[in-house]
Structures are given as C-alpha cells and as structure tokens.
Image (cartoon, rainbow, N blue to C red; front, side):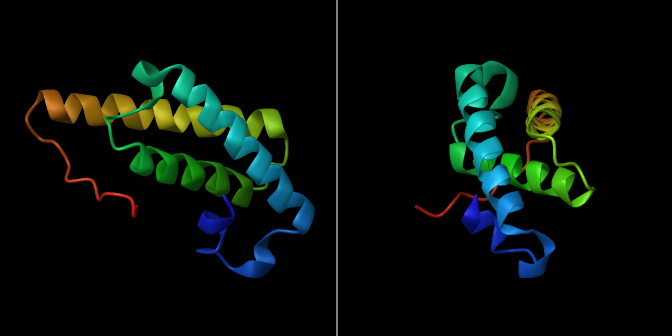
Length: 102
C-alpha cells in the first residue's frame, strides 16, 4: 500500500491514516483472494491489487476513516470492476489491462 500511496501528495494522509490504509488493504486483499470469482478479473493479480489499492485510497480521500467502511467500499468497487470487465470480455470488448511490474 505504501507504494501505491507514493503516487499521491505526501501531505494528504497522517501517519495513522497510512497505517490504517495498509491494514485495510491487507485485509481486503485477503478477502479478494478468498473469493476470486467475485473480486478478481483474471490471472493478472497485479492489476487487481492496483485497482483495490486505488479504490481504498480514493474512498479515504473522500474522508472515510472507518476500517470496516474502507474495506467494504474497496471490495464493492473491485467486485463491480470485475463484473464490468467480465461482461466486456464476454461481449468481445475486452480491455488491454497493463501488466504489473514484476
């Protein structure tokens, strides 16, 4: 999560917020891995991790600081992303998703 946060202005989050976001991301990612058919678009797990991190950070930028709400919002958006991507793939309109760096 700290890597993802480096893409944002350093002053946006206090250290307690950063620690919270790291905890939330780890818990949300574990939940996503436990239910891949709901949350994971394809084998490109790096892209799914990127999307989940972005969703959690964006929710925090809106002012949310409840761990449960951040996790729920991140997973909800990831599931929605998964459904939309799967629908596009079924229709033959797949998206070229960038690969995460190794």
